[in-house]
Length: 143
Length: 143
DNA sequence: ATTACTGCAAAGCATTTGCAACGAA
DNA sequence: TTCGTTGCAAATGCTTTGCAGTAAT
Image (cartoon, rainbow over the protein chains, first blue to last red):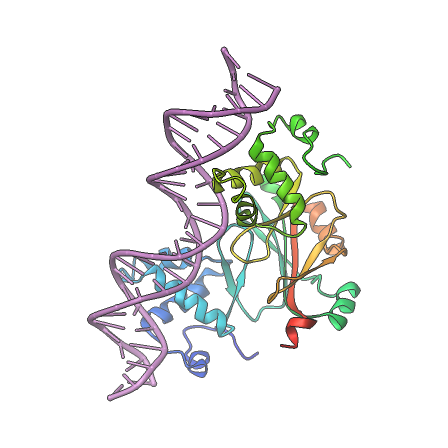
């Protein structure tokens, strides 16, 4: 329970040597209100109306820093762009609808398989993994 | 055993309504000689010396068509670019070394888990998935 | 006063596309 | 003669970077 974003809090930031700028606060707030798998563009278009001078570059730089700080996690749904989610939830993966983008959380993690245990012991030190399942949700499939 | 690339064969192509151009033949040959997880750039730089007029666009277009035809499969190692491999091998996933790029095949497929069976039956029609594990191989880890 | 952070514009990379010429069938 | 395919150049989409000014500590 060390690194969680619970609101516009500064604690996690200062520990990492990050400063709490207005832009960063706004971005963290937006991340919260987003409650889904968001992109840099999502954050940008959400904030732009109330922060006309905010630049996309700032959003990217912040998402990068927050990722490094462990506050958010980078996801890859194979769309050619990155998505993020807040870190600290139970470890999970996703089932993604290719049409509407709806996602369902999969709590089962494929990393717990004996074949990987064997490999891991002998030849590899595993540091990360990625598991995403694609398909069509009931709603989209019936169209 | 329907769609395999075994050399500069035309059978698979004609079935798909694809023409066997010099460029396509060269690309298929290169794919063979590549025997690893290659990128569009890999194919391009391999062929360029002997095919000075070959364009990257042609490589991309061919990889796309060959993927559609099921002869090769698109991979995503989270590098911000696509990799491909020849289809027809036993279904598998990869353990990828983040330093040297070495890959180890994982024959276990996480799609066979009861949680997914349940979801699949009720809400989703699963059409694809992605499972890659990252880490450092023994050799790179000891550096 | 430092020095992290920002906006802006330009650059970077992988990939795609429009179009006229080309060449398999 | 078709019409799938190609080369070229330009365009796209996402992301990064250089730089000079700004602001948090």
